[in-house]
Image (cartoon, rainbow, N blue to C red; front, side, top):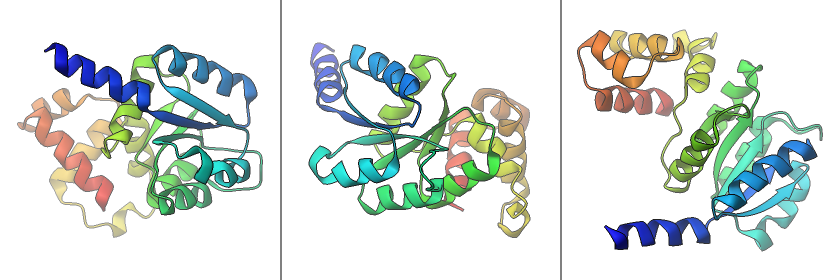
Length: 195
């Protein structure tokens, strides 16, 4: 058990997080929280300066503000980061579902609210660092509200899972409502994300 804990701590200490947020107070706040958990944090106010420094910084995960005031779009930023091979989590107040959908289509591993508990943000960063999707109700609600969703081939079961999860239900409660396990719900959500 101690070796597992030690390995987890070592992984966290070695992890470098790039925070891209044009709101300096937000960037500093999340930086303080992440540094307090042992992460190395580098902040940038815009996508252009972050991408310029990317080769030098080599982050493990990018926490990307959805709406940067630098003229770039979430899709452009996520595409550039994905092309560079870095896991990206969109960090947002959540009021722009169309932009969330755009970031998801571009390859963001997930969405986390700026108002989320620090444990949720840390879990999202760890999942992204492991290459796992960060499946939140904000992500599901944005996808569920997509006008193009009808063109995606989702089975009736996947449609039900998405609608329930998007309404704020947990994986366990969605599973109970549909007679499947929470793990099955999570697998369904991963399939939806891939489509």
